[in-house]
Amino acid sequence: MSVVSSRKIVFCEGKQASLDSQLLNKIFENLSAQKPTIVAAGSKFTFSVFTQGYFYPDEISRQKYIVFRDRDFDIKPTPNIKLLELNNARGRTFAFLTHRACVENYLIDADLIHRYWAAKHQEKQENPSSKWGHQDSPGIENINAWIENSARQLQDYQAVRWALADLLQTRVQLKTTWTGGSGNLPSSLALQDCRNQALDLINQFREVVDAVTQENFEASLTNYQHQFAQPEFWENKQYLIWFHGKDIQKMMQQENNQYISLKWFFNWAINQLDITLHSDLVELRSKIQQL
Image: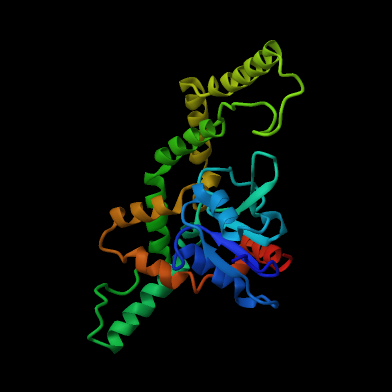
């Protein structure tokens, strides 16, 4: 059965109850028009096939849809906060990415954590049967220190991840044709002409692969180490943009395992998030309205 072309679809990662889906529901809260349908597409690596299969047999180009997912280490964040665009092989925008590394990065916020912590502690005081097993919140200042100290433990690891990501940008496949695909024949089928075209493809492939070297990795690593060591990087809390939120979350739990579990906090915090504080998320809402 074909999908009705007038529907607006937003594809995201994960499952239907994931933080990604919950974030989109939060973004849709104040939409004046009919809310779009959220479709959880699983892994980011299967988006292209998933979206085509979802709309089949209709042409995907006729559909009103957006693909939205975590940035991860696929693109560097820009100085100005905005949605980032991921282009396909033809140079067309295929997906819009978060400005921060992932959804969790928007939720790792000392004020949000303090509010959740204090509210749960208050519930415990009012209901002794509550299973809440922590003391009262240590306060915003201490929570800020908890976040920053955990991020500092990750400084070198994140520099390495970004250096590897730089090499990943050179990823390329060796093609079996230079015409754009099967069914498109070259202007000349002569063996020598085809051989010359193939050698051009091989040389282009080797140029890219040859860039994946230890020297290039070390150069990138040095740059990121320098960037992440700057005082302003920490003063401006840039680690909340550059460092992956899932890594920060894990390090926070290791840094102080007596503190609250952030897993349960995230499910509360996603509904408390003020979208207007994040211009990239406001931009996403605008793009969805304009579909």
